[in-house]
Amino acid sequence: QVQLVESGGGLVQPGGSLRLSCAASISIFSINDMGWYRQAPGKQRELVATITSWGTTTYADSVSGRSTLTRDNAKNTVYLQMNSLKPEDTAVYYCYARMTPGGRNYWGQGTQVTVSS
Image (cartoon, rainbow, N blue to C red; front, side, top):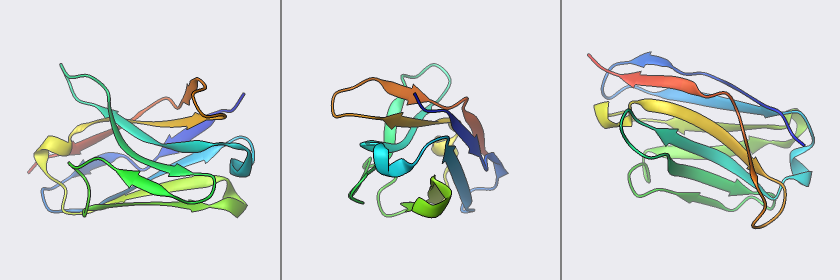
């Protein structure tokens, strides 16, 4: 099992930036892939970005070009840098980790991101 602790959410104005952090309780080398989902009120949870154990990243079209997902292996932490934020980015952001391809997702507790003037 793995525990995930998120931080970095908050209130930001449109056009601003935030960096979300997700710290894992185990070495992220043992995690097949991890990243972020988000869920806005009344909407389904959607995948935002993922990074594999070998460093390959993928992004949802809605955030591609505005977001960067990186990992710090020494700190067992992944970071989601989000720029040019829009009101439609407002959601609860959940970190996830999956130990094996096709395996279950482990979840963090979620962190609120609100983009508003």
